[in-house]
View 1 (cartoon, rainbow, N blue to C red):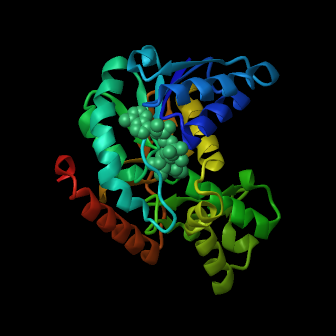
View 2 (cartoon, rainbow, N blue to C red; view 1 turned 180 degrees about the horizontal axis):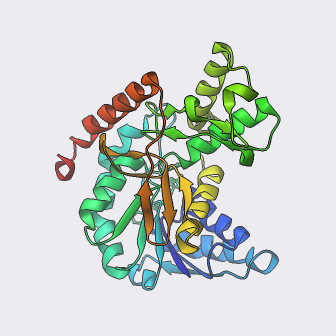
View 3 (cartoon, rainbow, N blue to C red; view 1 turned 45 degrees about the horizontal axis):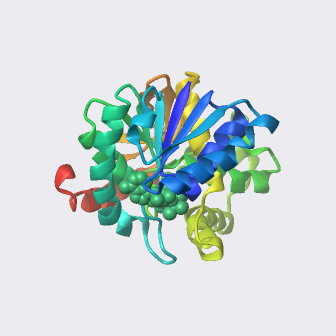
Length: 302
Ligand code: NAD
């Protein structure tokens, strides 16, 4: 089970490290425009293998041919948000990088599922699907945001975040929608377990939506949470877990965005229809509109 990571920066490195700690794959290869960076990150991550899982980690330098045989290629290449910058403002910079790298990845690893993480992830996932029409493509979407939502709820409930089921839908970004109406704890509707006051709701909404901005202000980037999320999605594909994850892909709302989807061998197996109240449904449509507007800036997505 070979995995490639393109972009051996903070997110790519954290994803590779999480895959070794979790034993997500047997072979991991890192590729980056900066070959020295790929060599160094691969060497560092490889030293975690003897004390965790026997994943063979190597650097492909800046040679895309090294991705041959990969079942999943995780794409984390590209520029990061600057403090105060919106994810959508990154679009032009990273779209240009994707026009160069996605065709090379698809040609080196034609069987691979492409898992896109670079931001704005919904737009770049849609662009990748256009640039690699024969590849299966999905985006990490709001898997990380859903983890943040579950983590904050779990703190209020006193139950493990694993027992809290709650989805963040729509854009991975400002317009994302926290699906309160369908959240549950151990199969019991959230409202029966926790008194959701407007204050609590506001605090959790803000904590989920602004987590990235706060972390970026404090340390310049976010990488560990997303790294673990990328390892989880990769495992769901490699091990045909059929896990329900809020990954990004085509949607009935128009643009690519996150909905609960069953992820297994081959990527997205099906998309589930979330049970939303009218306000959440409206917010999801507005999130789709915001994404459609940005997508229209790219000729491939018009
Ligand atoms: P980083 O600057 O640490 O790493 C980016 C890497 O991409 C660098 O090593 C750079 O050399 C490489 N790169 C640039 N152009 C390339 C090219 N043409 N070919 C190959 N490699 C290339 O940035 P980071 O913090 O790792 O963030 C990477 C991306 O992930 C950003 O777009 C960021 O916004 C995004 N991100 C996504 C999520 C999510 O939940 N989806 C979370 C955090 C960050």
